[in-house]
Image 1 (cartoon, rainbow, N blue to C red):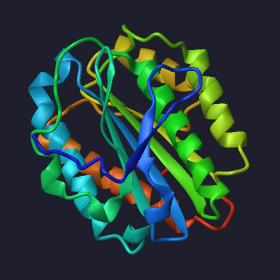
Image 2 (image 1 turned 90 degrees about the vertical axis):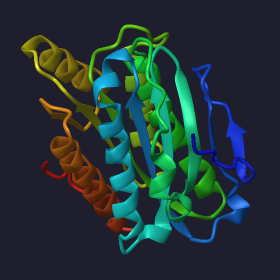
Image 3 (image 1 turned 180 degrees about the vertical axis):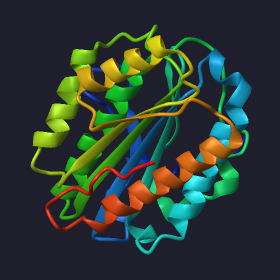
Length: 247
């Protein structure tokens, strides 16, 4: 398994959750503005059949973003979740993230703490973004929560996630934040409706539903992720948010 060097990362506590996060020490950042990208990937037991495809999706997203015109202004944080959360790495400059580092990285097993993961992803961009702004930098953010099922293991509630989303939106530190729930391998109408209901209940901007989790579909997802990240980065400094792109 790849090992991400934590030397330049500092651990931080999030109010209202026993899960925190880490981020690059502000003093070693070289740009004056950043788009914060948080990806939370479901690794519950049902993901086992397409674990490699999810990893390839993350690898391709990183590869494409490293080639984007504003690659120097992107920071990425990656979390995996089953019945608990595991931060694979905290907010670090995208140019320090190598696609090969994400091969074989995910650890599959357990249930689905979807609300805990969504809350942590949203609250982390809000909290770290505020720290950037307090230190004279500018920031906006985009959050992706990728899951193949509904919640069955969280300690937090949809309302807790909603409050984190509302705080991220109303906080005057971050220019804008976009939140996207991605349902993968969604085959049943019941699951589709449940995930749509989750997205609406927690106040996410967009729900993207994929009925497969094969290599082709997740390659398209990687393209969607990288294009959305680039679009959000391009509006940084305008005071607005990019439009959620079509899949």
